[in-house]
Image (cartoon, rainbow, N blue to C red):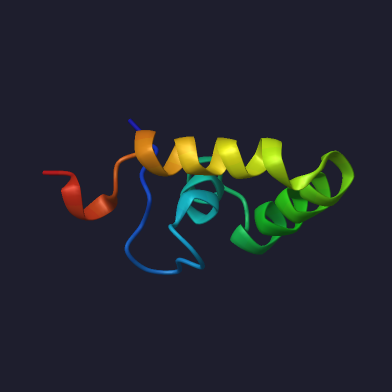
Length: 65
């Protein structure tokens, strides 16, 4: 069973997007580009809030036993 975690390696900021990419079996670069595109289209604030919430909610790989 797959778990959504923020990996220790391949992080750019906090690992949220690379964790989502690994969970969805996608390339992390594609997920990051989609995030930036949506960020530019809709504005920074909604996605900044979602990213901050994801950092708090999604566990880091180093905290998983």
